[in-house]
Length: 346
Image 1 (cartoon, rainbow, N blue to C red):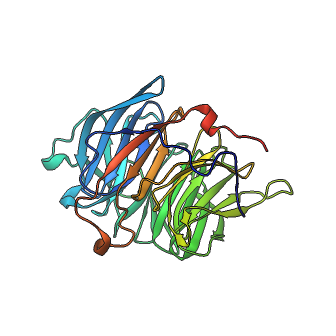
Image 2: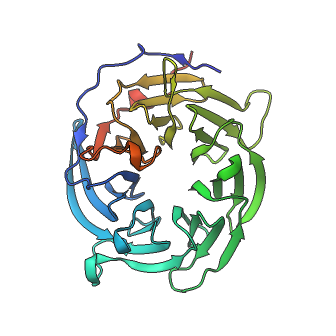
């Protein structure tokens, strides 16, 4: 499947705003508050950092607010917010799920936030379940665990067919991607219940998943420069499909992140250093930016949809032997107008 384009192959890049103090090692996640323009990043240097962004007439600036750290200089791999925007949850290589109440710096050596959960291996993904007020974590120990921040033990554990590579929660829907190209869809209205278990429509290892804003399906990205659009219920008018992206001539790059805009269109970023905006309903590419010539490891839209933050850093996908000391670790914010993101019917 090929997407049509409504723009020239690559539009000239307007200089995106570079966020100050974005860390000293790879950026693994960027997450916006659902209630404000605060956002956090997780980094391989063990830090979780918070900024407050402001946008006026398309001009953006971000002010560093605070930082906490995971134990033992271990990488932090994932972050999520509570629905009220007051609390950040993170997971990483120290096998811990941690809770940081914004505005309250931990009174611990090296500002390590409170541990509310633990796995037997690294924690790769975290989410918040609004109906039950539980935090969910997915680990490389092949488990999903559910946490009440007031209790030391998990309130539930689900064994999985492989290590977790990514998960996403949207309302009462959760999608979990594991090794072996397994995709598990859960109804998390109350007690999490497995709704469906399928094999990825993509032939190679899954890198990322994202639920549609209306919870009618999800998108999945893989290491082979391809995205699958999966609907919970196929109809003659609504069909599943996959398309190629993040490819340059004969080179194929991983799709590192998929994130949806409030309008229902979405962005992908990849190891080719390219940002693309897409319209799944009309099967169109809305915009593609010139490559920044460095891997883009993660990205997200703010709740309002007028700011798009992305992390430019080595993603460790090829291991330490391909890491170049001094590689920049930048977070950039692109002002997104509604015209950039709204559907353009054919």
